[in-house]
Amino acid sequence: MPNKVNQYVDIPISQDSFAPPSAKSHLSQYKEQVQQVPPLPSFCDQVIETIPNSLFGRDRMVHIAQVLEKISKSQIVELQAIIEYFMRFMLEKGASDLDMGGPACNNCIWLRIDGHKRKHIELGYYTPDQTNVLLLSLLTESQRTDLLGTYALDISRQIKAGKDGGVWHRYRTSMYFDNEHLAFNIRAIANELRPIDSLGFHPTIKQGLMFDHVRDGLTLITGVTGSGKSTTLDTIVDENNSRVDGHIVIIAKPIEFIHLSKRSIVRHREVGKDVASFHQGVVQALRQDPDIIVIGEMRDPQTISAALEVTDSGHKVFSTLHTSSAVESVARIVAEYDKAEQERVRNRLADVLRCIISQKLLPKIGGGRVLAKEVLWVTPSVRAAIKGNNLDEIYQMMWEGRAQGQHTLEQDLFRLMKQRMIDRNVGMDYANNKKRLAQLLGMM
Image (tube, rainbow, N blue to C red; front, side, top):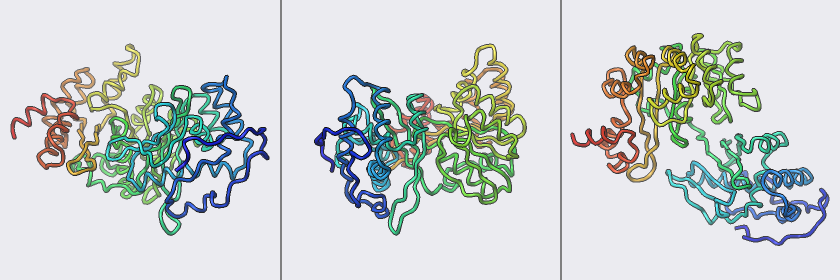
């Protein structure tokens, strides 16, 4: 375990002034599962000693980045090895997320396991400046420029972990400023996808998600952060990849799961690396002969408009939104536009929208988590409700739409309770419409 406080050494700043790392600090030792946290290199605190007391926030990070440019590649690797240890530790503990950095973390590393985020003191203590050095060591020069320009950065990383040389594991990482220091979230990406049948879709919905049955339209996977949207979307993409002789273009920031081309060619275009923006990626995809276009997230009106345009041109499009229900998803898209444009957007959205899957991950009885979801399939009645701005009617259409494979979140929560997957308190806590769920519970 690294010391809480390391001894500072007063040295001039030049590349030669940093001691070379020991042989065991090279990445080769991490081909096997690491059993002990690598010690924080002494030169990390030497870097910190050079920071003028007058520098805060962005200026402080600029200074640290300039110092890191002067140290050797092997020393950068030694710093990165600590973060990579944390990534392997996540796999060992089954953690979905890791957080560190900034005053909020109280010098600790925090992990989310089975939905609960807690500090793990066995991973050691790192001051905000020690974390600043560790995090900036992960970035290329261009990534540092992006971070310091926008105060946030989303990138992907991959490491090898496990026995016999290990296998590659991918992570989505988000770096951002917290009270003038850097903070960091790491999200582990599953190496294997769930079979689509495990998601419990009605046959009508499953067919509608497949290109060989429905060749156009917009499908949205929605939910709050950490609700498993990406996993569901990748499962749907994988099933199409296994069934369709075609071309799938994925535009995301960052790229998470890497799909091997099976019956389809699957392109991965990361915003910031392979294309300048989501909007440009969508527009460019039209010239790339796609059958399916996957947009990692519809973040702004420009991306939404591009998604509606390519869907309207006859393509099958999948994307995600940070919303907690199907009805909220429709309202959120329309609300992204000025009032003068909203009627036009509603009409266009109603014409191209095929399906919304809104999901949550709930604590499961006995441990772990279980998926709860609501499904909206856009029937002529739903389409008319969207065009008429009668969104409140859509919930009742889902409630009564079991024949088309539709159901509300509350109906799915009720199913999970009857199957003893979740308890009543959890179901009520996660319900969007607690009154409707109470009605169902009164029938038990």
